[in-house]
Image (cartoon, rainbow, N blue to C red; front, side, top):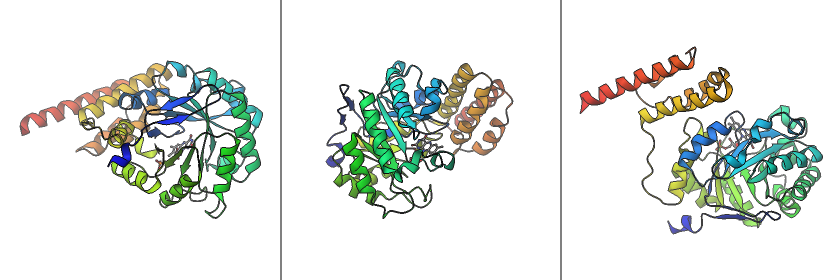
Length: 340
Ligand SMILES: Cc1cc2nc3c(=O)[nH]c(=O)nc-3n(C[C@H](O)[C@H](O)[C@H](O)COP(=O)(O)O)c2cc1C
């Protein structure tokens, strides 16, 4: 097992601001999920991991929209990468500067998003097809900021025979300091299985750190993926939904630290309340709508979870959610007492 703990450290030079990441396990940028409040929960269990913002549109940011997504990053504990998407080089470099000023640990350029709304306009995965523009984006942003610039992309647009290796080598030459690879093409979306083998082959070619992404949901997947890819790090996306402790759990496993304790049912239910309270504090009654999707992801895999979940997502306000959860906890504790 020594192989896995050779080094947990990823070093990025930057242009005057170098960065060290003391964990191989990172949180994916997830639109609609990895906001400041969610990151705070993830951070409780993963003090050293690199966490990402949701993807942020550069043009909007330049015009003053979405600024809350990069607000006061320097006040957050631990490293936070800001992910930007757009196809306009000037907008992307200006947005990168704003993010850097706000405390971004690094700037990541999204070259993998398959969503039509984004790729039709030339951003996200469309950049795989517009390689000259992709290279220009990396160069411009690298010249605009001092922190490292990284790229997150996929294994191809339509298929895996598009010489993505050449594309990635050119991004490396342009100044990208780390590449995250989701092991699927744009066409595959989320279907099939992530191709860790191909990530491993690309890892051998690149000099910069390669982060493997796709279908890593638990410590066992993490070991298998590291073994297959020899990647410098792992990025976890869907595995975090409803389980904000997951990055920490996988980080412990990869670092071979024993004693990670997954929250028990009561703690998971209390986490829902904590999350909801933060959302209401930040967003008022709209917070409840956002909380509902997190509730349905978290409230699962225990007896009566389905019926409780159905009630929780129909609750009309935060008080009703709390009452339902407190009642469920009382019932759980009562049943525990009877059984012991
Ligand atoms: C709800 C959701 C939102 C996502 N948002 C982003 C995003 O903002 N930027 C990005 O690069 N990828 C985004 N992705 C893709 C993930 O970061 C990740 O690459 C993908 O889910 C594969 O990893 P996984 O198998 O661990 O989920 C998103 C995925 C999901 C499911």
